[in-house]
Every structure is written in C-alpha cells, then in structure tokens.
Image (cartoon, rainbow, N blue to C red):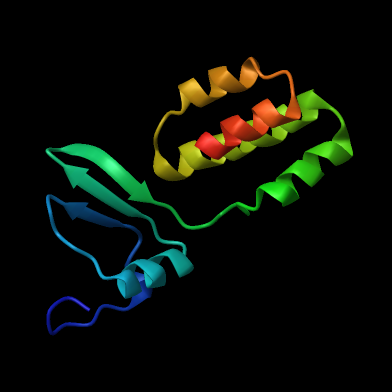
Length: 117
C-alpha cells in the first residue's frame, strides 16, 4: 500500500528505499515471502539489502550435506554455485568470497565463507 493506493505484489519486482525512508515489518515480510528483494540506498550507494531466503540457512543441514560428500572440492563447488546465484540475483560481484573459497581446506572453512555470502 502506498498512501491510499494499493499495488498488487505481482507488479513489484524489487524495492529500492532511498535515504531515510522507512518500511514496515509487514511490508518487508510480504516482499520476502514473495521472493522480492529490498535494497537500501544512501548517498547513491548500496548500503544494505534484504534478499529472499533462496537457500536454507540452517548450518546443521549444510554441514550434514557436506559431510555426506566427504570431499572438500565438491563442497567448494556447491558453495561456488550458491555464490554465483547470489551474484546473478543481486547483480553484484562477490570476487572476495570466491577468492576466500579457493583457499579453503576444510568443510568448516567452507561453511564460514558460505555464512559470509
């Protein structure tokens, strides 16, 4: 709802909030549940963003997934694909995360990089 006007969620791709404008928790929840991102812009720079939950953030599930492979290279591949999906969605390069991933030698290190993504 914008003032007195209602806008169907199907007409919204993403939302950009400029300066110090506010958004209610209900609006944020509605957007995220409908796979819409919210970007917060200050002084013409991206300050932060809310992204829909594309990936399960339960670290126990991810750790079990990686332990089943018992192969660091396969785990790196999985996380790399997740990072690339985030890059594509957010139209933002995450080269630092990719470089950190290359240096990982254990499953816990890989989980750490994924947690930063």
